[in-house]
Image 1 (tube, chains in turn green, cyan, purple, orange):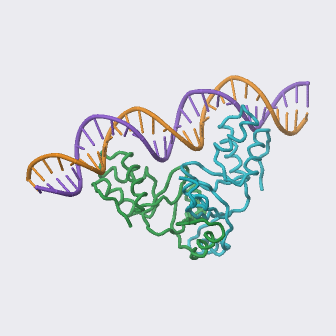
Image 2: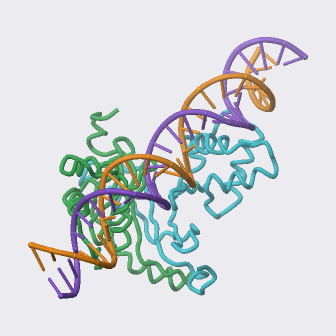
Image 3: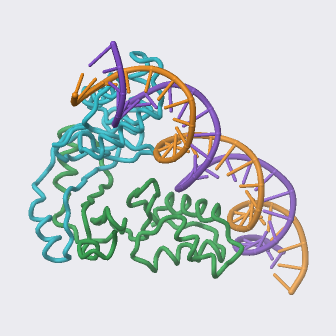
Length: 133
Length: 133
DNA sequence: ACAATAATAAGAATTATTACTGATTTTAGT
DNA sequence: ACTAAAATCAGTAATAATTCTTATTATTGT
């Protein structure tokens, strides 16, 4: 995988935050995590670096919830469950390989797919037991 | 399926536009289609009615491309291919049933999924042959 | 047709995100 | 370690999608 060439404390901290959480954060959340460590960081820096990390593939946008992009540092695409109640984006195991589907798209339509996204929507266990709303 | 209670010419026209296309339009595109018929329609009306149709389930948001929500009037969830080049959102056949996956989510995590979204990303046939960019 | 209710247009407001600018930090060669 | 070049940064301004507000107009049940 490519990585960004240059580094800086803040850039590294941003990536570190994304890598060390499994909560699929938004730009705003990442900002709120880095802010206490580097109080003079600006939200623009977070957005700029997210864009960079997306280009190199170090980070991917896994979903958009309520108009906010959500990110993940995990390399290989996997399946998510989004709770429509608490807006949590949760990793779940991928049921079956999609390689056949990739081939079929190429064969049947001439579509050259390079990745995919499988997302289930509903209510997570916590919300089902009334911890939210 | 629920439907909206009240009707109006514009409201009906909006739904009609979504139903009679397979291009998974954005709010702006729907607006551009209804505008020639009802020149005094406003973009706000399109957004308000889309929100209503989403609530009743008459319309679903199938994807977000470049920050714009894309809609579809098809009742049952199906699979999409999004061309990252021309931003087209194209229907494709769904490879296999996901009922087992729904059961597993319930059993393994207590997640109550009610729908899902499977999307492949890549380059469509047209764009592969250089018709765009 | 009438009145009550809901829908609409227009534009202002909000929110997430991006672009710009001048000052600072990092890097790479010495 | 020193220095110059390049990249990065904070802060601000700008943009774009969407939502909200208010006065007006259309729809529905009677």
